Image 1 (cartoon, rainbow, N blue to C red):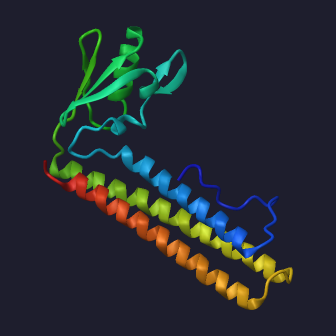
Image 2 (image 1 turned 180 degrees about the vertical axis):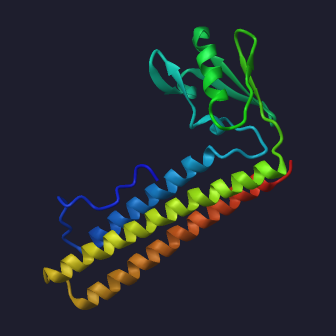
Image 3 (image 1 turned 30 degrees about the horizontal axis):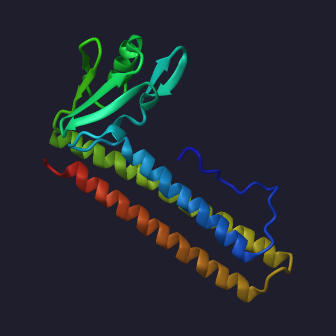
Length: 201
């Protein structure tokens, strides 16, 4: 998890339990969309342009996403093609794909880069499934950190006598429900992705 702040900025003072719950929900939604982004870079047996999302090619000294340097297509389930907008970028794009830890071997004809997507070996599938589990665990930890932050913020309101002990209990229940629901969505998304990885096409 890269972008999820570990603690709520001290500057923000929450006035109500509802505000704390809304903030926690927004942050948990962010964790889910971050999860989708991280999982897109884990390849399955099928070609998909999102496979190259994590790769950056050198563009005059600036690491740049491939979709900002070329038009990406999937002409069939075993191939991704990239048509660079500037043919002088072909070498840099090809080099970035080779270096991208995806086990891909691009080739070009001077105008178009072809990236064959080889079938995954049993061993590679297991490695990718393991990688998915690590990604999932990182995001689960982020969810639990958000829950902890939210509960601490509610405790501050109780301490300041802004809310009652009953409100405190209710808020903790709500925050727990929110966390459970988001972790369930996370687990479901990972399960779907793992099935794609393990599926033999």
